[in-house]
Length: 476
Image (tube, rainbow, N blue to C red; front, top):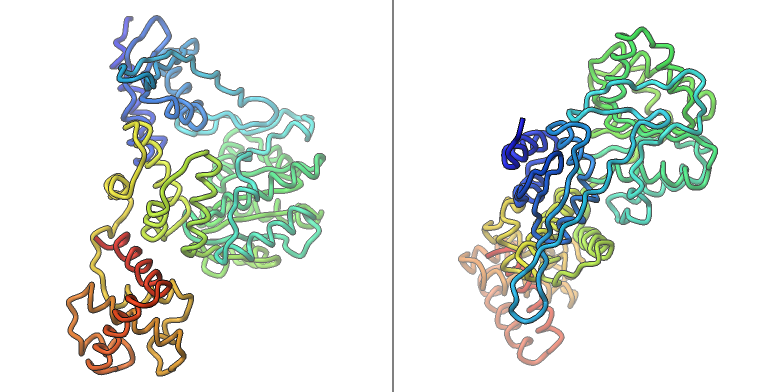
């Protein structure tokens, strides 16, 4: 039966929408236009070469599986790419590119997946060689691409130690825990990739705990629990992501307990991640939790401002793109929760720049990222000013409010009062209360001192203007 290309693409989008997050769907799939369906070849138009390359790098398997589901196993995908014409005022033109073939995921003991992610056959053929076991690791997750900061120093250092001597350190198991998007999966997969590179004979396997549980359920249904256990006992380095999802699954916990014991007793390395520390995990048997505590539990914190800037700049370097300093600072100041959101904001900027064919400035960045920034129109308070000044001069807030007369502290305090008077509607008396209960005359003196120094001291003026710039970036 003949099908219309728009109907086919609409059906594809319904499937894709269930397999990517909302922001990614809006950024990467909504701009696509279906333009032709010839036999089993669907042609879609994308707004730029960058767009095409991103889809092929990150979503090629999803696209191909979706289209095959709609058009059959012989279905193919072609791209019609809009290319900007650099010659004068000539209109853009288009080029056609074939989609890349989907990689064969069914070699060795790779776990075949259908489009919804359900497992069909997770087990090896009896007698299969260990070397053919696929690690399920993402090769892009390496230590080189994992920026070090105070937020992850302990966990990263422990990870490096494990990578150099898997199963031979006191960090066994290594438990990495922290909130969503802080880099747990990146870190543990970086360990796995490093071990694979340096220890060719070792078998490394990364598995999410939910997938592990689903495989166990399938093994019960197919009466192959022993195959399941034997397979996992082959592994030299087992990485289990989001171990907290074993909560409440008593039989799965029991099987994992025996696999854990076997691996640990035989000097194999176990690496786990969780969204909370072992002592805060509920619904997991105490005998398992006690084993999680045998090695090292290292937490990941929210990255500080400097680390966020470094993460953005590293991502820009790897992608070969540039953004103005004020745009980078705007992102880093306003997205503080996790690394994933930082990178998501950067990707959205790149996509819009590609579609609109113009560079991103601060004004356009604020508009593009308004859905990422929960507090774009947040009110500026004296607390915010004090924190910005303390961050700029790298001093604790307590010193700013103290009675110390050290010159550098006094100047920072005076700048804070000056900015509080300039940018808030707070009375002089109330401003003084925020700085250790000082009176309004002290605030007046501070403001006059700052004005005089800005007229006579160039370096001092630069400091004040730089802080004011940060205020204007973060508060409209």
